Amino acid sequence: MFIERNINKSGDSPNEILIRCLEKDDFTEWNEWHDHYKNGHISLKGVSLGNVNLKGIDFSQVDLKMADLKDVNLAGVDLSQANLAGADLSHANLIGADLWKADLKFANLWEANLKRAQLQKANLECAKLTRINLESADLWKANLKGAKFLYVVVDRQTFIWGCDVDEQTVFSGGGLSKARIEPRLIEHMKKSI
Image (cartoon, rainbow, N blue to C red; front, side, top):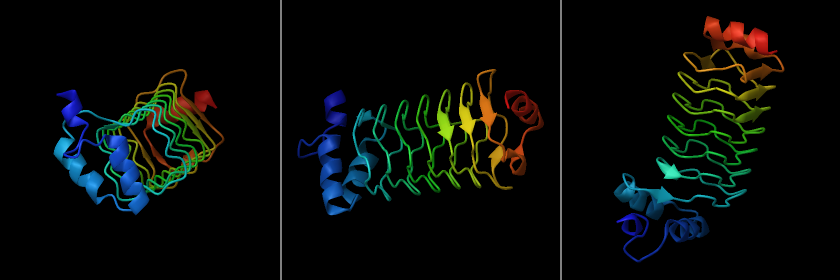
């Protein structure tokens, strides 16, 4: 059953389908296959896709654990409920990406652009969020335990509310005063600076 969920009619694996779509710069085949199997387990664990354009692909519920996604264009991509634990998303373009309930535990988001990203209920536990753009991003009820927010860019539309934090959560480098932040989190931020 597991193999059937990861192979299309032609017997191709998810990696082979993705490579074919990248060569054509068209994700129609992937998205149609994904729609058919998205309730199954689609694994691209450890895939290396550095510096490619994935705009228009549907990665919702896909296992991208430990993936190399450096410099990848994921603007507007559906990554809801995707497993991105330990993934390298440094310099990635995630403008407007849907990361609802995505698992980003231990992910490296150094200099990633998360402007307008939807991070509601995302797991950012122990994630490295250095020099990222969080303008107009929504982090409602995100897990921020152990996350390191260093020199982030926010605006008045950035929403950080109802989040789980702990003594290892760090907010440093200033600039967070513009964001809409829950009062108890503001107190925590003052302690962590």
